[in-house]
Image (cartoon, rainbow, N blue to C red; front, side, top):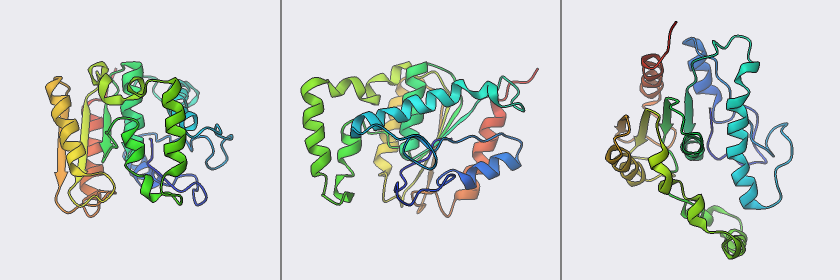
Length: 224
C-alpha cells in the first residue's frame, strides 16, 4: 500500500494506509505499507529533494521484492493500492516492472514530472522557491521527460481500478478523466468510478470504494 503526502513532522507509521489496510486485513488480505525514507523509524532520505522523491520508487520496489519474507503470504497473489501521490508511485512501479499486478488507485497524482510537483508549490512555506531553484539545476543535467510517467503508459500491463471524487481539492477530477482516457486508448483493463461530492479521501463514499477494491482483488485472485 502506497500512501499520499503526509507532513514529515506529523507523520506516524500507518498514516494514510491504516484504515484501508485494516479493512483489507478483515477481508483476508495481508496489508503491507512502507513508511518511506525519512518517515517514521525509516532511514534518512537523500538530501536532494528530487533524489528523495525518486527513492520512493526504489522503496516500493524493495517492498515488492521482499514479500517472500512474510510467512503467511501464499507466494502468488500480490495487489497494489495507491492513494494520491502513492497512486503516482504505483503507476511508476508498474511501468518500471511491466508487471501485471492488479492495482487500485484512489485519486492518483497522474500529471507528469515536474508539473506534478510544481502544481503544489504554493503549499510550501517559501511558495515553491526552493523547488523551482532545485528544478532549474536538475534540468541542467537531466531531461525531465525521462521521468514523466505519462510517456511510459505503454509499459502498463496491469488491470487497474480507478476512483475519483468530484469534490477533491487536491487532485482535480480532470486528471483522472485524462488518465482514464489515455489508459483506455491503450486497451488497458480499466474500471473507472466517479463519486459525486466525494473528497480527496473518497468520503463519504469510503465504504463503497474499499468494498469495490476487495471485489476487484478477489476477482483477480489466483488459486491453486
